[in-house]
Image (cartoon, rainbow, N blue to C red; front, side, top):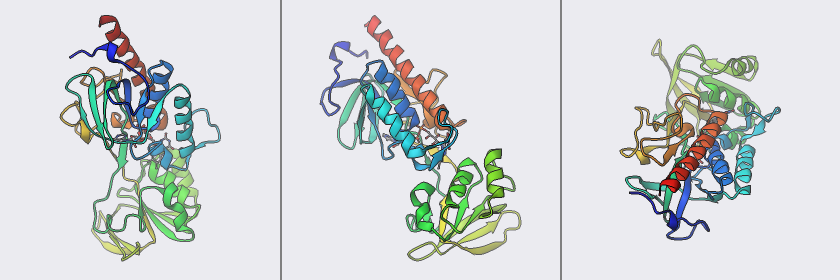
Length: 325
Ligand SMILES: Cc1cc2nc3c(=O)[nH]c(=O)nc-3n(C[C@H](O)[C@H](O)[C@H](O)COP(=O)(O)OP(=O)(O)OC[C@H]3O[C@@H](n4cnc5c(N)ncnc54)[C@H](O)[C@@H]3O)c2cc1C
């Protein structure tokens, strides 16, 4: 079904019967960059923020590898700057979350907690969420010592000892950040070598507050009203032991937030939406950018770049349909 361009309106995002030109799901680096480009094309994009305004980037204290900030920039500060710049050109931002999509015909239908939206093009930038260990005690002690966000929760561990699980960039970045507060940070990694970049590795090895436990996994979190200890298991010897700690910070990768699109869009085995170089998905008019579609790079700069590209393609898609309508 082709959409009727005479129905296109712009106005308040709350207006019923409005058919949006561009609807963007997600307010992380990809979503807000897409919004900036779509807004500058005068398409009045609407961004649905989801639960995390600014996305994962807003969870981290400092970002040192986003170009243009030689001294680094606060994660949430960067998110605010992205939003401000997108809004300056006419982006509308709604604090709402999509719960279902109907992509079989255009305009596409997006249902949220509050209402339904119709849109000619959809840009999916729903990013990814941190993986859980799925071990006993993890859920019960979440917010009571178990955390996935050092920036949010590090302050509560002043003078205390914490454990970090993981061996990638996030684990080391956040472990280093936690040394500002914690008296000791122990990084537990299931292998005998880290995946993190060289600069982070040498910073972590040089930090006197950080030490490592190798070839080890956490199998249980213990504590009544707060974390008191964790159960560790050496994967080479199978030897188990209790390790006293006040906090457990988990950085073991992410799962893309794409469940809603399952069965409608092509995805890979990991649940990442399949998008080509032009950010096009298996449905014309639906674009995907950032970590929802990127199992490889997963950075602020790459996600922002993909978001911009998706918006440029949405503009081209709309132009093409306008001339052929
Ligand atoms: C602790 C940590 C530290 C990091 N440090 C760095 C760093 O130093 N440098 C770097 O380059 N990268 C870093 N990253 C990675 C970087 O943050 C991500 O690559 C980037 O944020 C991905 O951007 P995105 O827009 O694709 O997705 P995300 O940032 O994941 O944003 C997803 C957005 O989608 C929204 N959403 C989800 N579901 C829905 C829904 N159903 N409806 C509407 N909206 C929805 C969320 O609310 C969120 O706004 C770090 C990540 C973490 C977790």
